[in-house]
Image 1 (cartoon, rainbow, N blue to C red):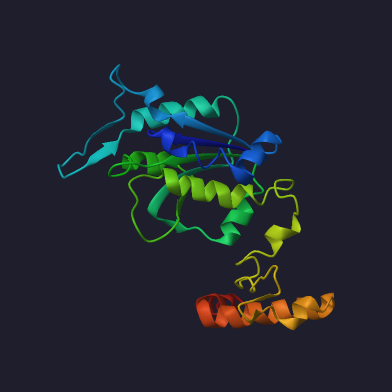
Image 2 (cartoon, helix red, strand yellow):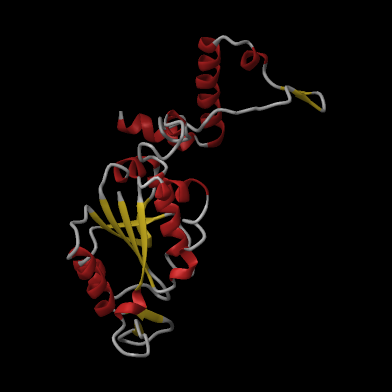
Length: 230
């Protein structure tokens, strides 16, 4: 898989892909992540990629020309399954979307900035718009890192134990059960006996029960969504 991220502030994306699982995925050659500086496609020698909005109003808007040039440059090298724009009014990211994206081969993620992008970018160049929540960030870089992380960890070979991702919250429309580690007792706080029993069938049943209970308590909306689509 290759993920190309377009940003006018590429330095914001250096750290997320330089550590832990995302770094190891790249070192293994399983995933390639390339961050492209939009200013390399600026309209003038001053590195301009933004301008005032027609009709007035506060804030700057990313121009269509640099974005179109960058996307066309990338598309000249390979075909892309999705060209994604990170937007607060896009489709809300969830585990099912991450699962589908993890099956793709090549993805472009465009990071907005300032007051967003020229609407013609969204109308003609983008295939999907994704939001990570109902709030506004200074730019799309952190959101792009969240999206990329949610995808990359699902790609086969990235996690040392591939079954780990299958037991994550939301994979089966339930949140994950409680987890414990050593010591078995701390300040008189005990680990549930069933987890120390060695009986894997009972442990699995307990975990499933706890997932249902925790979902009912903390995210009942997930159960409502599941029943409404069944």
